[in-house]
Image (tube, rainbow, N blue to C red; front, side, top):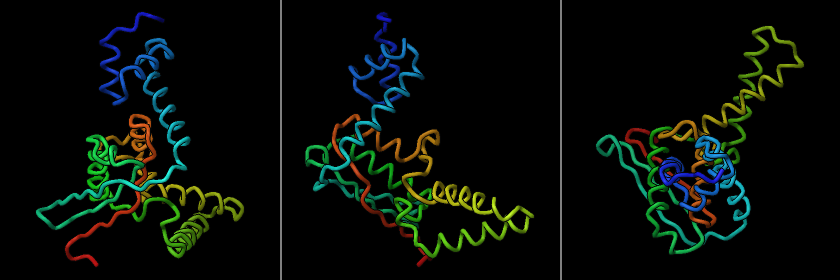
Length: 199
């Protein structure tokens, strides 16, 4: 389909944040279907992110978010490969949005590896006990507990959480889109969340 209009490209750019040529290619590949083109760009973003994941991250930014009149604050470090990207507006906005997301959703860690083993063991015990109390057979209790642990990770690990401003995307989706757009390895390295009255 060659009759891809400028208006279609503009709409896809606004929806995806991808570059003009990438949007045009995505529309051609998906026969002018905007939703399919968004999916095409998302898959491309994941592929780009995987290709770049081994590159070293010696640059980056630290951004903060303060909420509730100074009662809640987050500081997040996001790494990238070059100081050029570290000064990029999209990169800085991404870091700020992640700080705001952390303030709102309060993840336990960046990924599953950051959740203490004791916490996981305790959760597993609770899920198994609940399943047994419901009269579930022993052999499916493990599967039920495993399913609930996966949900626990989705709720508590930053990278798996639905992004607060667009719950159709996870934080990982958002990061992959930025990597595809900027063309550099980017990673959320660490964060800290402070709330007055909490230790």
